[in-house]
Amino acid sequence: MTTANTIETLEQPETATSRYGQLADAIESPEWVMPLRAHALARFHALGYPTTRMEDWRNTSVAPVAQTAFALAEPSRADATQLPAAAKHRLVLVNGFISESLSSTSGLPEGVICMSLAQALTKHRHLVEPHLGRYADVEDHAFVALNMALMQDGVFLHLPDGVVVTEPIHLVFLSGKSGNPAIANIRNLIVAGASSQARIVERYEGGSEASRLTLAVTEVVSEPNSVVELYKLQIESDDAFHFSTLRVDQQRDSRFTTSSISFGAALTRNDISIRLGGEGSGCVLDGLYVVGGTQHVDHHTQIDHAEPHCDSVELYKGVLDGRSRGVFDGRIIVRKDAQKTNSAQTNNNLILSEFATIDTKPQLEIHADDVKCTHGSTIGQLDEDAMFYLRSRGISVEDARNLMIYAFASEVVQRIRVKELREELEATLLEKLPGRERPGVSP
Image (cartoon, rainbow, N blue to C red; front, side):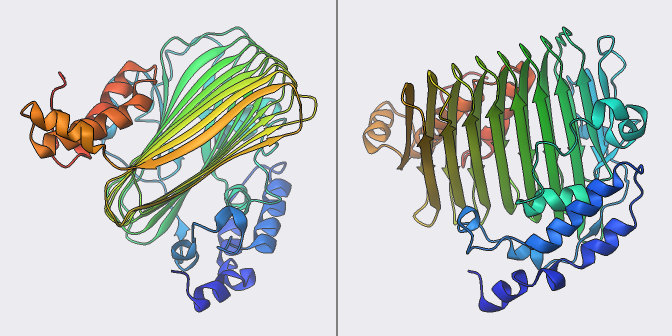
């Protein structure tokens, strides 16, 4: 519960946010980036931390973050055993900084750039400058503004026109040891040229350590006829905070798919906004959150149909146990000229404990008259009839329960088109089940 003292602290940005000005002053950037960072810092000071009095934050308090004196994370080392075994193309960041020794990008097709954003700001300014900060808005989003103000490193991925990358590109974000609360500030820019194709896997992982804030902003540009699949996996410690923003700008006839899989941290907030800005473009948004204990996970999504003949499909599922809390706020906007829009949005939730809660709010905002749009949400518990059926077949109560939970959650996992990631997620999902087994299903 947010106390009066906490509210007072959050509503005094000059007090609660002033320490970040000192951190920002210590960061070196190319001259052309400095005005972007300075403006972002000014906006963060003006906005302050969001409070539960704001509509978009009324179900999520950021008090634990506001009350922690974070320092900037420093470059560190990580164990190579943490890397995905099948990641042929990978760029690895530890504490938000590129690790050259753990990365492997030499086998990418000719012309593809996959490198440190800090290096790209200088080496490929002509490719970065037209897009950096153009889609993730610092004017109204405090954490986006803070991310830009504290920008040091991240990923720059550029796909030339017509290039098809057949193997997945893994962007791996690991946390190194830290004795004090620290921010891993990550900025990513992905530009997919016309008729290019790629599958990208974002992984955020970290062990137990001092309180850690992962602050990540990813901007994606999908140029005409491009096909981009972006899969995000988040498995962080119970003492971590994770705030991420994804902004996607799609052009004519482009296709974009994203799947957000969240198994932790203590507090997670994922903001996803896609603009269908070209006729004939389309997107798919999938999400799965599996939480327990006192974990809190919040997904805010927005799909903006700005042009005609575009389609979108959104499916989010949640499994909540213990005293955990989930938030889903999904908004679909159909602009006046976006005729022939086809859109569907669904949020289904499975509550396993009488103490777990979910706040779900699917929304449609339609300004056109020739559209086909649906939305809905469900909140339920395990089906007693199905449980009885499984029990009558000699399956134990625990195994029957696990089988039903697995079947509910695996629908989202099965839609992932990267085989190695899909298999890994199936195994991770099983670990989250009480029995830690996969009854009735072959490995």
